[in-house]
Image (tube, rainbow, N blue to C red):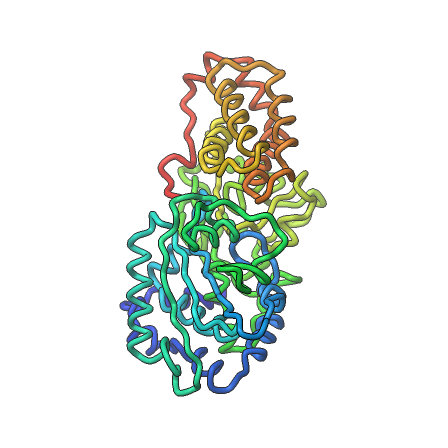
Length: 446
């Protein structure tokens, strides 16, 4: 049985309340950090843990904290990125819904470590139930003396505010999030300066994902070295995975880093295999923005080694024969799914969500959607495949923020691994329109 750190008490009735969460050891990390550790000690434990950002980029959290500028007389801020909008990803929403105090406790510990006296939780605007749940958890923690003035008599002051998101996928990018938090349109900023130097209101700011912040609680409780013993290589600790698509048991799972992907898909402890006795066709391992992999590359690397659920193993082979951990939005496709239609669905999403600031993304995503629409609905020709390849190349790496890259990578990998399917649509236009393909992402709430 895999060790669980964040979801260990998920099935305990009332775990979403302060009273029950406290009975199960909640807020011990706050007491330990504020009463027995300096802010620098907490940062050092997070560095020792090897915790990497769970929002997608996988950057070492402790290192990110270490970059925070500390000018005299200038406030510092911690901002939690709860704008979970990546198609196929819903683990942060799950955590905020069922164990909101894990996030609140993590916010207190992390704010203390960073010297922040005012912190914000920015939650996707469509998640109003989760916004209310987290606001209630904050109020409960404040009533118990864990938020506010002179917390636990230690002299440390902290206020935490919840801000509904601006209703845009782009606001999940940290600088666009900061713009939105300041009341501006959520457009990404040109970097440098980075938020660690000039972030919210021009002050030093750290932006971390919900899961990343919640993970600081077991790190402080048990120590960074103990946390680092879980997992392998530079992929330490546990990871929440949002599993959807054609699986027997879709849902949110907490895995130990290093779990073979084949075991995650087929074992009874996790997803239980492919639904309806179908065969696996392809996998998206980290949310819609990462490259799709056909079955043979999803289960084994190009070297023939088992593909593990780690940052290193998933990336083995680069984006030619590998993919990325991303946000942990795991989507399985069975043999009946249409890769062309799914790619069109993704591209339509990215076209809709582009902020329009960069012309390669603004124009390129729309162009890709039109070409994919032609191919899917029986009006394409062979030159369109090469045109798609050319467009995605001109977007990739040429935009201010990663949304352009996120739109290009699924198209590139779909063509690279499933070019024959694109060609089939073009050679059989009438059958392509009438064939009863399923669409994995339709009806799946992102």
